[in-house]
Length: 500
Image (cartoon, rainbow, N blue to C red; front, side, top):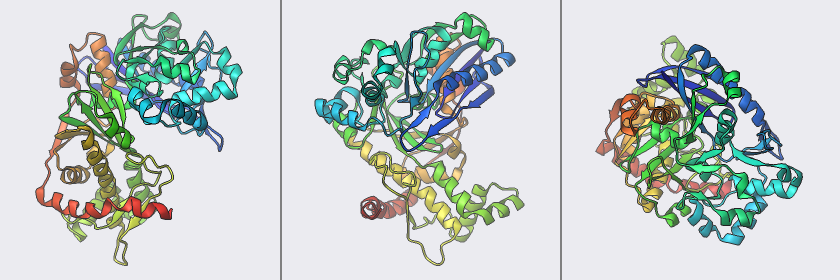
């Protein structure tokens, strides 16, 4: 018997299969086009379902005994459909500029802090409800014809099972879900002018939606007895896959985006979370919540440095049978000493600033260059800048009662011992690198395994599927060195922002 995780991303979807012991077997991936122009950023959701059928069929052919598939997805994006689930329009991505005026109108009617008290979110046009209002106002024929409104998780679940249900964590990304009552906020929908009955039923993370339809079985090759499970928003699934189940542990997602996800044993201080633009999201364990602290450029900043500045170093690394990252780390250690910070101040806002600023107009900056600065110095400075930015975030989170004592790290960045040690030193907590790069898929499979009886509970699933590799302990002397530099880094955003 096999279990699988189906991850719906903004540009592609993948289906990953594990055996009953939680061991990775194989995965299939299919991308789909995203259309971007000045007036909008959209995806054709029918191509998402085409991708889903393709990757599931590929895995079902190889593993015909898949017992269950869990569905996770990116947030915010929604689609209005007819009574058969046929899309009536292309779907707006969270980056789409439309909905700004509607968001302002909704905020004025409720008050920004009152909205945050209900939804756990600081009002922003990226969330679904503002864009639903935009469609109703500007394309009323679409809204009037719509029988259902789906986000991507429940859209896929509906097409596979015929059941309309959405988990709490993804429902939160609409900015119309009450995080205390754990249901749609009828008051918000009423003020927004959106019929709440068009929305899917809200259910706890990891709820079984039942077996697939005969039509879905025919399209995918799955057995008619295959269960489909509503998992979560992708960041919540990643926290589960990293084995973080209480407030003592937070998750460091060291991917293209750098994201720290702390766990709260009860609802955190909403005022403190509001000030830092931190989302409050219901977690898989009843009564617990997670938050998202993130930078748009984590691994992306490192990749920028390598692609644009390290062409000679790439060739030198290849000659030595090293990755360019390993080569630059070794070069810095040889030239400057591994225990010496770069003394560069690199503001990693190369794609705008995320939490705690949420300032898309902010730009990156490199301060402290001299005639002696090398590519290895800048590479090291980029690594430091990403972690300094996370220190800004974790410092802000402490005001909300965040109290994690260790980090579990996932993603490609967790493979860099240099970066992991830097994070332990700078954040002054132990950090454990996990074997899996893709914790979200692991989390999805864990909950699918529980829903299908493969695992007894979260702890049993984690014992099988969460594998630790190396623990990095903070070093007092390095922490002190970094804190001395951080005093200056903490002033960079306010100093640079008026200039760019």
